[in-house]
Image 1 (spheres, rainbow, N blue to C red):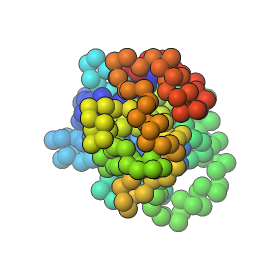
Image 2 (tube, one colour):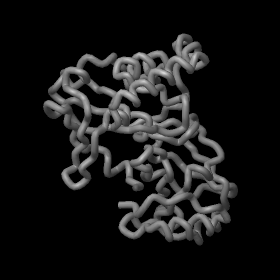
Image 3 (spheres, rainbow, N blue to C red):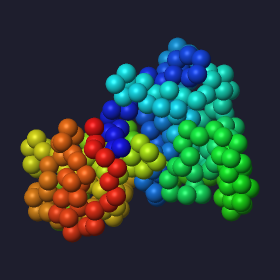
Image 4 (tube, rainbow, N blue to C red):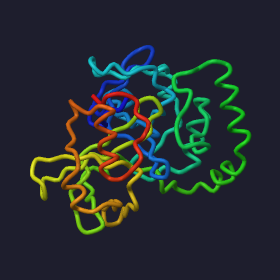
Length: 259
């Protein structure tokens, strides 16, 4: 099902043996448009340390109770390799983090799979992925920053430019909670079309300029003006199909209503 990042932010986080904090941010991969980590703030626990949590660690999300349950203990989280989220995260730091928990390297594929599965078969598959990915290991050892990990908080407010001019700014993100793929940017057009929000598929993004804080999309302003309006309470698979056909695109495989 598709979910809004704004609904995920500030949810409480529970380990198997107690609370650990709340969701503060998320990192996404702008090559494959997939959420890679939740960023958790731990409050008074761990002296307010900020930690990363891969989707593999999530046992379930109770949206009504606004809680994320983790398949980890407080000790496991507290002993995890430290990462300074105020600086770009290096590939070596990520590999050390994933190795610590026994998770597969996500850069072996565009989306997460086997989320929440801790069977022996899953562990064996993860180990095979790590051993087979020698090229990635060599890249990791260079200890360079990964320029493709981006903060959702940072991208909030970026300008979105059509081929013939600016059309609004990034208001929110919609992701698929089955594989954590980032499916849509929610576009706020209030400076151009007051009070109106529309969806922009990540498939339609042509470029992102991190220096000018601008997202370029493959469409015209008039197409956006005439597009279906985004209503988070009334977006069905049929609405998604209408949206894609409006822009002359093939509809994506839908996974149910957005809430």
